[in-house]
Image 1 (cartoon, each protein chain N blue to C red):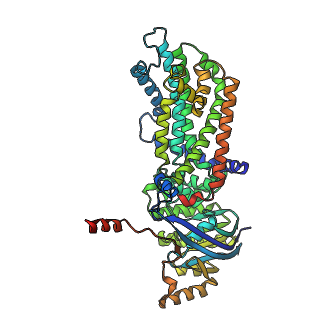
Image 2 (cartoon, rainbow over the protein chains, first blue to last red; image 1 turned 45 degrees about the vertical axis):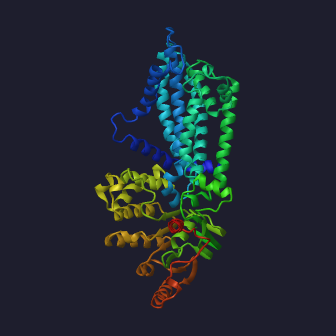
Image 3 (tube, helix red, strand yellow; image 1 turned 90 degrees about the vertical axis):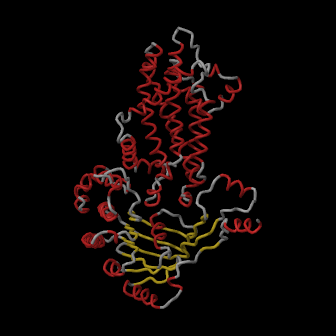
Length: 268
Length: 276
């Protein structure tokens, strides 16, 4: 595994150049360019807060003490993190099929292909996060999110490794079963409503709360929200959960790549 | 020190008639229902033995479907052998299907960078070579436009310039040079001769016998996944050309597939029609 990681580092110029190319290509003819990736979760949150907060019973809409704005901050932090996780998995599923031309010409360590995808979605996430932090300050009328920003880098690294590993597993699954990417879309849509992205955990049903204790995506939502929404460092227990989860998924990805890398070419 | 060593090497593909395997197909197989998309085994390479070292320039000839391109891909490390061992030492550079490995939305300059980085160059080492690559390709201002607007000949020029400028120790070329125009072919031959002078290992698949005579010091004649003849280019080419005049197994493309092919659904439709 270490040799694999070392060879990924050796080829860093290659995949970094491709990530830059992907970003440029995606926003090639658009006016706002990369601004769209930032606007998307913000606009979605705006629409949900204005239109659905009451319907979802997500916040006390009639309460004038700023509960609605606070809910906006809750939603924004959840949406941008969820977008990163969902996009990493659904785009990551295509990592091997989209890079088939490189796989057939020049064998590189397979970790590079999902890394290319997740680096792209990761950059979008970081840009969105830099905009979300000041917006949260404004919405909650406090500078705590800005002060707590120092906690974010290790959380973001952990989340990145988690998403990279999930993308690698999805990429190999999609190579073997070509309808995996459809399944991912459906499952992630279902999980979007189950996970406390839109609805605060204390307003969810008892059974849903129980399920969410075992929901891996919920761990990362809590990790990101702890400094930005609750204004405190994540608890030791939460840190340990996050690290254990990332380690398990990373181990699973290493296992998948290690066992299937020699044979996956025959599935493409 | 470049080296190729293949010992008793075989490569078999297990493919399905219909490429996509859905979960439904996978589950029906688990339930032991007769599969409508069975696997067939394609024996692409059979019991190959090959040794090559620095200075060898091998030309591979044979009928379509003999396994020449598959052999090249195996040497590049794209396919793992099913049986036997493969040892290839040295920095490998491969030129297969010419559209492979290009980012179509990026321009020529960017693609030079991507391909060079793919072969292990760094931005510092590439800076010294990039102008030389651009000059050799003779694409001029075309390097500023996206590569998807290039003709296949232009792509060959670009790919060949990059691949040879990064100084590989093992160069694998699969029938791509024929897309280039005559002046490029002359230039390419000159460059390959220069590379040979510095004792590199080259394996070239071609259907043009003239190329083998001028560029290679050894030729392999492949047939149905086996090496039929391995020797001096003139002798191998002569034997191959003599076999053209006699109708024989040498040129029969089909063969080397085992396994049951599924009956098409038309049989079912016929049965339904006759019952109606």
